[in-house]
Length: 299
Image 1 (cartoon, rainbow, N blue to C red):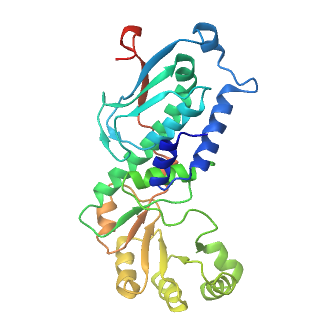
Image 2: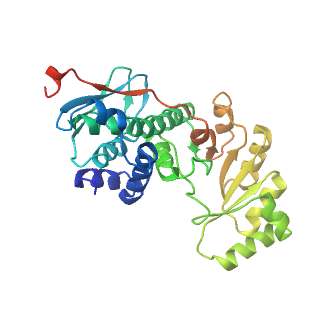
């Protein structure tokens, strides 16, 4: 069981504590193996030894996942360490900044170390990358949007990291929003028919439609769609789409976007720029766990 303060913190951030616990236990099991043991720590450290470790940023970036890392330490051993958070998710951090301290059985600290850092570094990397996009769009109405191109099993956490970095989640999966893409249109025969079938089957589910031309955009909106994914359009074509249907639908530009062209695409008047790279290509933020020397462990 997670300590109540971690559960409350996760819920406050829109994360399901049960989902976080599932991810953490799975990651720990992967590292500890069938025997569920850390052979190095067991061999070198007495069971009764207690120390303090510092979680420290090794690079500049944006923090995300600190309560998730705390959950790792809480679930890694029989005794829950004392965990003190020194920063908050969404904070801009600099190399050398102290993010948290953890005091408890030394074996537990070292057993949890890699799993905690893997998750914290990964989520902070996503948040850092997302913040660059949010900064690039500052002063426009456009927001950066994530996609379903997430690490299997980590979607909820990675999409949370996008939010921590200043981005937006539009759909969590195949269940909460219908997305009519090119293959759906081909299979159904047309945009209008695909939209009609979705509306008939799921009248309360939001519907998004992928379009590649101004004509398709007008057709989709005329059928009732109020969110269009404008795929691989030039800025010139996007401006035409905005002029034709912009007051009747939310518009998302997508397809090969980069930070260098982000301001130009935002200037077309679209509402969102979707970027799969936020979750499939963000480098980690370098974060470390430093065990304090014994005489400083409880200071």
